[in-house]
Image 1 (spheres, rainbow, N blue to C red):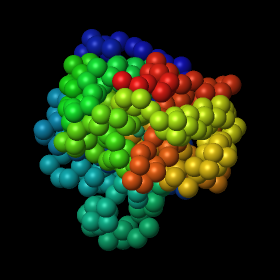
Image 2: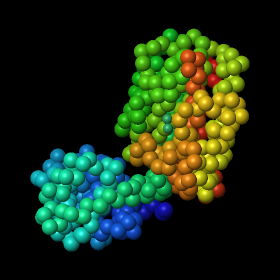
Image 3: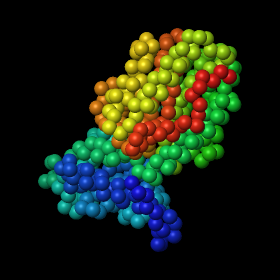
Image 4: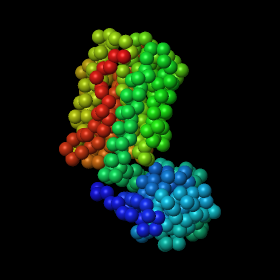
Length: 378
Ligand code: ZN
Ligand code: ZN
């Protein structure tokens, strides 16, 4: 999608109008699901549709109009971030005020995201409605916005490239810190410090650094355990930069690797490269998963590959599509996915290699290609 920039006449600052087009498409998708209004409260959805980054808000959309409801803490921020969208500061809970607005506009069936709304929150919104309109007003419109978010526009792709590049720069930092005797947490700390200095809002998830036998834990946290003299070290990390997440994994070796360690490393790498090669528009998520799994099967390692091959990434670290066995979802240009096969040999070692890949018109563009995947022996 073409990115449109304009100068805000009043504030005199650059603002994006992508959000307006996203709202239009979101409402159209919801209409196809049989609702004539939408009430959204999930933070990343609000950021996607309005630019607002506060922690409390509700977006109401109906009939080509939209209003963002939030509370007094966000008066200035919401108006600045969501302009020119109408912002209402409400004393009532934002979702309740949003539901009332939708009713006042004659909405009969309001879609909400059941995956992101607690039963208690739904009850609270429902209680505020006139008794005659409670029944059937709220309808689960699951994933309408999540599906839109799977395909990134040019503005998002540019941000994701920056996030991925910053992620790669952290790996370079880690290579300078990871040595025998250094605690895993120290490696993570240095990477996180560098992320902050590079402008990251946060890490996109808790940094994983594991050494030695602990690499066999796919999601081991960075602990005070010291990196071994000889053995693998796995680092899985990402930044949240300008709203967007990066996610990548590299596994390095301290000291010289044994022939068996080399073999397993190269099998995982072959599997990862095969899955990346399978990325193209029209391929199913299951086919990409199978490309990785098939290589590990041939190497006799498939029983040690205990998770899915990858996931979509964007405003959130885990988004659609899910790249797992038998998934029939078709890849489309603009999707950004991870490819992260691994092999975890209990009591011995584990290896995972992960890149972020943009689905292009013709194949896949690896956003984290800057970080080498050769077996590094430090
Ligand atoms: Zn990861
Ligand atoms: Zn991942």
